[in-house]
Image 1 (tube, rainbow, N blue to C red):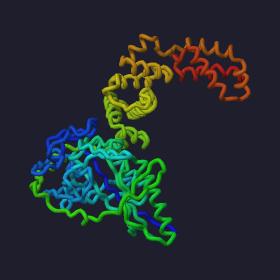
Image 2 (image 1 turned 45 degrees about the horizontal axis):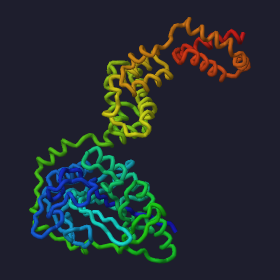
Image 3 (image 1 turned 30 degrees about the vertical axis):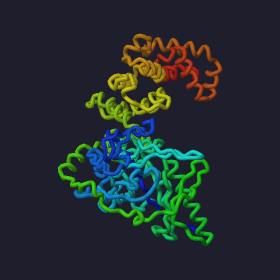
Image 4 (image 1 turned 90 degrees about the vertical axis):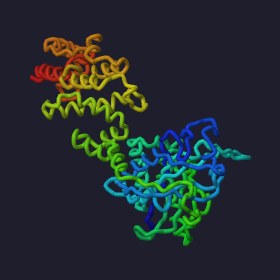
Length: 483
């Protein structure tokens, strides 16, 4: 029997701030030496008093605004009570009754996935397990952590993956977190249930600590299959928390799922209520940059780019910004057709040649010697027919290595394109004499022999001849052999 999945996500994001959420200890999740960024407050010593990190609150509000949320003008912190070795106080300072942000959405492929709440809390320590004992590093304890909870609007593993990817991209644009999933800076939990009807909620199973987009998709796929088999066997699903084994690609039981009342939430007595001023919200709203979806729409509208190119520029933000700087160097008063050709040439050379030189490394303008001005000049030389595609590769590679102006490289390496008709004709006549078989093939109607002959001319001229002139002049000469 077919069952319909209903999926909700809970996502934890470590914020990028100088200090921890409720103390002045350094926020450095990459610190290798254990237990150095700690103090009596984040270690939960009796009698210590927390203070609220203002920057963490502002960053959380920015996330909420970017996700179309309502911002709570009055909010409080609460104690979430549970015992676990990595939780020094025996409770976590979090938010429950009045989350900082609520009732938002993120659009994925035209569908709005609703966001129930976004709140700020403190992270836990890090446990390292060995065969005989466990070690605790409290450097991470107290780091500002955002928890985002979606409504159960997600209907497939792919949709869950797309949501996580788009959220990750948005957080990078906002610069509120490094969101390195391998380092646990963005951790995803999926709640999965199956129903006989679409939208019908079954027994919820939570899959914890998914640290890659692939893991999100694969874990949910497996869980749907596992639950379907149980239901088809006439058995009941147990509400529980499960882990994910990325090697075996299976989920496994960890513990029975807690209910919200199990945490015994109550207001944090050591922290005052927070009042968020409307002026603060307006200022933070003005600081939000152009986000991925708006940028996609603008790139399509302004540059008429295909979806694949747009996604490359959106996901590699630095490359997209470099592209726009190059385009801004072109004369905006050029005829529309010429400007369009320049833009498309720019896209092609950035996507293929320049990224190819980087050999898989991330593009950053700081690490590229080619200035946008020089890249624009290089593209104009191609469009104006001054260099062939073969010469272009040689010149661009030299620009990549040295940062030199393309015109200087052409002069130094004598790479000026041959456009003299008589000079090109001399090379063509030599090639015709040397390739009798290709001429016979042409006479026999084999059109591909022309391409071979063009290649021979380009080889003789070391790629310097104007390809279009070679093609036109060669066809003119070959007419004599058809008479």
